[in-house]
Image (cartoon, rainbow, N blue to C red; front, side, top):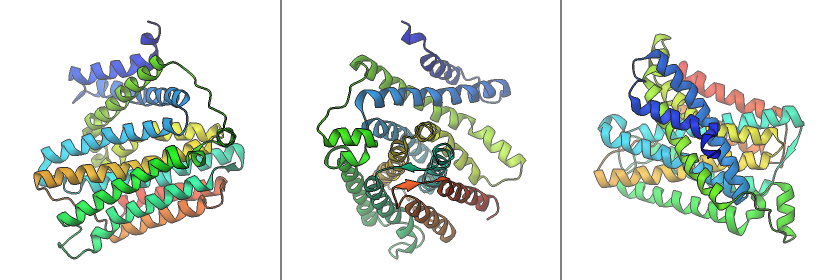
Length: 360
């Protein structure tokens, strides 16, 4: 009974109740309450993800959080595409691009900056990062870059065979990444002390009960689900604020993507501050891979079934900014040791991404 009255249960529950009450639209007071509950639901999701991570061990905990958020994100994108028709042909591309830029520059950047600020230098497994980045670069190029330069269809489209090929490529790469992360090379993705224990054949200490695990998984999805729904509900208010300041509407998608990524970002930054940079990188790079590797095949399947068009290819400016971000992350994580400078450069890249949306 005490667990059911914990704030990490009550706040998301209140948020769901407010969402279904219908009081949020066109009411500034309830919009403010909804914003507060959204933030508290984010923190609740982080709490439950930490409980899960302690119970199942790394890197499974970070995988569960990354996939949970991506599944909810994919569900929202598909529902909007089916109901929106031709107006949503670029929705998946814009969402994946914004999420990737926010993860690579924002989450990774702030992790390196805050970790470096407190601990000067932090170390991580270079092997794990190399596996993640190799997978990520291939998926990014196949899904967001190549469609701009194909000749089968005029514009930044894939033909149906090309779309199917790219989808299977994403699934294969992401599946083998998970295989390496959880089975074949799991020790690469463990924090240093756990990796040493694994190599010595020592088992991880199991913390918590099975009931607590199931309980936390359920309320992780409850928390993340209401975060996404409130972000969608509050988007007209965000859009109104952006219009009032004469800013581009493209910032609405970036703002919503940032809200959806808050649980992952907060969890990764907290881990970096605790000098657990390996966990931060597992979460951030794994999230980027899940965001593309699961979203594109799911959206492609919907497009094939409903005979819908989908724009995937980015314009040249976006390709350059994305290439800069990937290249900077690769250099920053090339030595197995980081410092505050790497974090600052990535954060500057993040502001450049936002700046060139405002001043294209």
